[in-house]
Image 1 (spheres, rainbow, N blue to C red):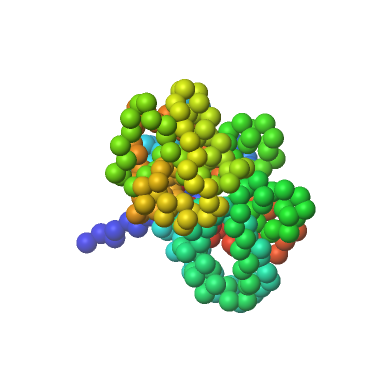
Image 2 (cartoon, rainbow, N blue to C red):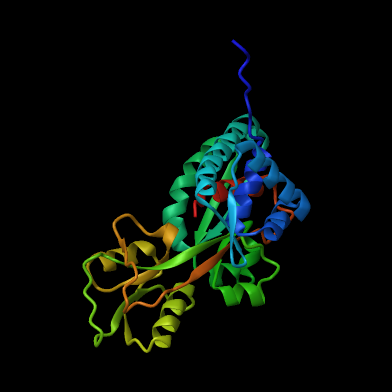
Length: 293
């Protein structure tokens, strides 16, 4: 029997592909990875040659994975997660320090359980301190400078006009969420369950409802996703959440004609103190790998 040719996919090609998909373009991916745009394009070309498949397509100005690309994206995330975790096991003892991580409450509820255990086991000499609050509060001075890493959420206008220096990491759909038993009548106001003033989800819901001349009322306000979830389960009203953070016990309300489309949000991972220790970069990689949007 002849020798069977074994082909391997270099992890740097996979990381480039995942980054292109996450940020929706070559230019942003190049900035995030610290490489030139031609180098990014060449790496994607090599990956497509290895797989024998075209993996990306263009939707207007946005670059999106096609059906084969979505499959490769899932495999790439798993391979990179194992790669990073394996390396962590051999290099973790050399990394120490303290990381103060700021994160919005709904992402803290859904994301942190995925990463805290893995991170602490892989890096036992790193102390992780987490603060959960609205993006507006996390980014305001002087509080912002106290954080080593911040997961921040923005509406498009806020991101593009005021925060150009902050790298776009991902986008996520905003969706209406309820308990699945709601009955909407055109003449009745929409009952909203919201976070306090300053929450971008609250702002987007009200803007879109008013643009459609839909009546609305605030029923319940709570800064914590657990409290909001409980109120929705009790049938007090509905809210908006990023699709990736919707708890399993709530339902996405798909295309109800009385509920306007909410668009999407921009997600950024920000390191306010560039000179922070190596543990910050490691935590950022853990967060990036766990954000499967």
